[in-house]
Length: 336
Image (cartoon, rainbow, N blue to C red; front, side, top):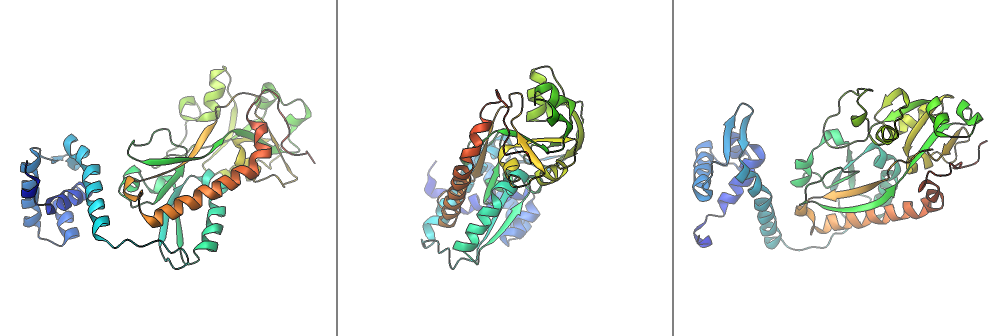
C-alpha cells in the first residue's frame, strides 16, 4: 500500500471511534456531522479490510483486528502530536497541571502522603487527584486519561511501562492486650484469635466477599490453605486504615503489609509481630501508558514518586528485615 495515498485523518477518526464505540458520539467529539463520520467508517473498513466495529447486544463492539489496531493508532497519533508541538521542559514551580493517580488503599496510606508533601514543596500549584481502583480501569490508563496506577498487579498489559517501588512482606497487628500474646505466638495461637480481613485491590468495582471462597480471599487465606489451615474472620474491610483502627480492639488481629503496620510504630496500644507462617511477598509497582513515556511532565512525576518510594524503603529497612522470614516470630517494637 502506498502510504502517501492514505488520508491520515482517518486514523484520527479510528482513534475516536474505537474509544467512543458510537458513531454519533465520535462525530460530536470531532465536531463533524454523523454522515461524515459514517463515511469515514466506511473508508476505514475498506482501508483495513475489516468491519472494525460490529453491532452486538451490548452496542458497537470492536473486532479483534480493531483491538489490535487501537494501541498502534494511539501511539502513532501521539508521536505526530509530539512532533508538531513545541518541546518545552517541565517547570515544576510554575506548572498548574492536575496529575491523576490511581492508588490502592495500601499505597495511599504508605506512600501518597509523602508524595503529596514533596509535590507541594517542588510544585506548589500542581493538583493531585487520587482515585481508587474502582474508579478506573486499564483502558483509562492505556489512553492516558490516568497518569499513573500504583498497586500490586496480578496481570498488566504488556504495552504498559512499569517500575517496582518496593517488595513488601506481611505483619500481624494487634492490641497489646490481645489474649493470644499470653502465649508464644505460634500458628495455633494465631488461629485462636479473631481476624480482620483486608481486601487486595485491583481495577474494577468490588463485590461482597464469601468467607468460604478461599481462592478469592487473597494472600493470607491462600497461604493458610496451602498448609491445610483456616482462620476465623470476624470483619471484612476494604481499607487498611480501618483495619489498623479495628486492631486496637482487644481480641482482633489484622494481618496486613508490613509498611502499613509500620505506620503504627509509635502507637503504645498496638504490637506488631511476624506471621507464624509463610505468606509470599508482593511488589508495589507504578504503571503508566506508553503514550506518556516521553512526556516531560510525566517524567518529572515518575522521578519524584520513585525518589519518595526509595526514601520510604530506606527508612523502613532496619525494621523490614524482620519480615523477610517467618521462621522466628519477633516483636516489631516493644510491648508496652
